[in-house]
Image 1: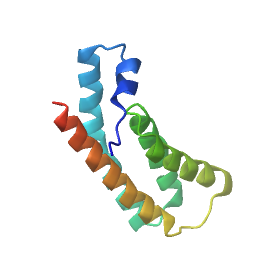
Image 2: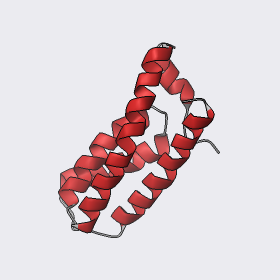
Image 3: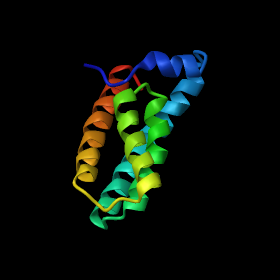
Image 4: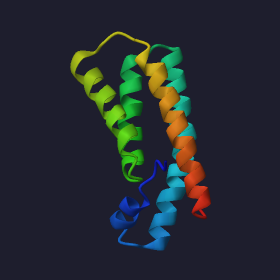
Length: 114
């Protein structure tokens, strides 16, 4: 099952191939940064930083139609913003899911020629 809904980005860019490629290139650069930021925040049990990374990553995955991942990131972000909860094991699980989904997304983009 595909994780990217490429029709969403094509709609957002109005089919502009150059803009689409630019967004794909930015996405490809951001993913390792998000993973590194998540890993560091989790290692340090920095819940506030986890929420900030979730917020930044959410918009990137949304533009590629990755709704399941975007919803999980949004849920964690909102919970952290409202409740300032203690660190728990959901955060490493979110990172694992993030890595799995974005790795698959990058592979799908490669298959599409990006």
